[in-house]
Length: 294
Ligand code: E4P
Image 1 (cartoon, rainbow, N blue to C red):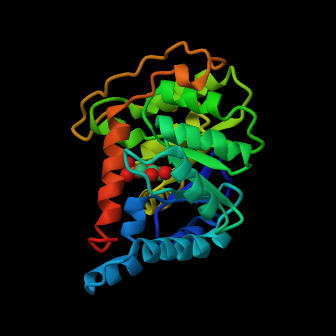
Image 2 (tube, rainbow, N blue to C red; image 1 turned 60 degrees about the vertical axis):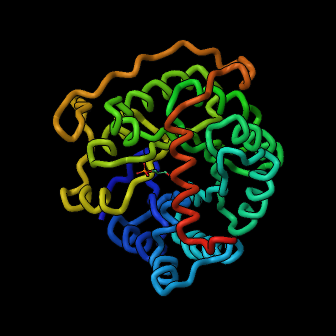
């Protein structure tokens, strides 16, 4: 079991309550959990239903998702359980908000995940005005993080922004640089947005998240298993993150940009190809469990 809890809160990135329970036993605590449509589609109960030939209706899928987060909710600490709305590229903010309001009532410690798109940001802006906690997902740029900050100013509870480290690495860009740049940019802000390092693929990503003082990191159970198996190493003063891809090639550094957090959120250029691709993948994984007409 881990003796000294890191300052960075540790969340399990998954969709299976028994896995969360196992990690909690292994580490001694779990601060929170993130889920998404792809992870929920992989939940063993949903997989069993699909394998037996039973495709779900949208309502059944939502009921399964609710049961999953209701089982996870009491297992985790104050970082809560992030629940993602079902949104495709055409979903309007009002529809995301309606889903978010329903999901927020499922458990007492919910965070609602909206994508870092124009409509997702509008939904987040309306949500924080209604005291719905939000986690802005599929963040791939400093501009998106600046827009999250500006759109949610005045939130009474911490807002999360989730830079996707691993998916940037996958295309040769140093995802940890995005975490570093957002942290540096927010250092000039009021602290209402917390950085949640996501799409973590390795213990090295986790240690770098600690070293960069990310407020939170969401980590697959397999990576937490590896961290535990190696005796829960922590980064020391000399920790140097080596941004390398799987083949050992140096990842492209992401330069810091001077952005003014006081500008209106609509003024930031938030388009990012990986956000679009991420939404399309979530939709495909979600639909893979559904009846054709659902
Ligand atoms: C968590 O909120 C994210 O959905 C998750 O970390 C994405 O990870 P992936 O890039 O491995 O799918």
